[in-house]
Amino acid sequence: MTSEVTAPEQVALRAKLAELIQEHRDLDTAIDALAGTHDIMQLSRLKKKKLQLKDQIANIENKLLPDIIA
Image 1 (cartoon, helix red, strand yellow):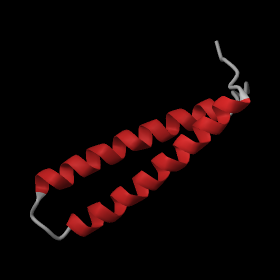
Image 2 (cartoon, rainbow, N blue to C red; image 1 turned 90 degrees about the vertical axis):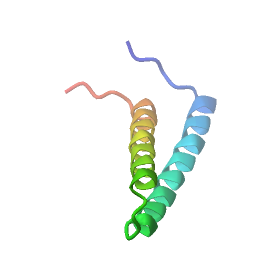
Image 3 (cartoon, rainbow, N blue to C red; image 1 turned 180 degrees about the horizontal axis):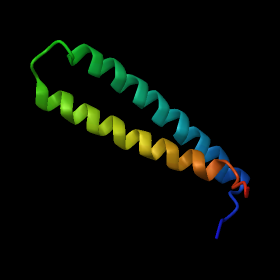
């Protein structure tokens, strides 16, 4: 049950993917900056957000890559 992604959808997905990847990298920087502090709650929130972004990135990548039946 795979649906083909149209060209305009691919463009939109690739733009969203680039945005999410950049946000993921920004969170890396923020997490590194907070690593030396004692703000455990904020650090925990950032790590949770980073994991959510990783899931969204994987979801979009799966939509962009065709299924290969092995």
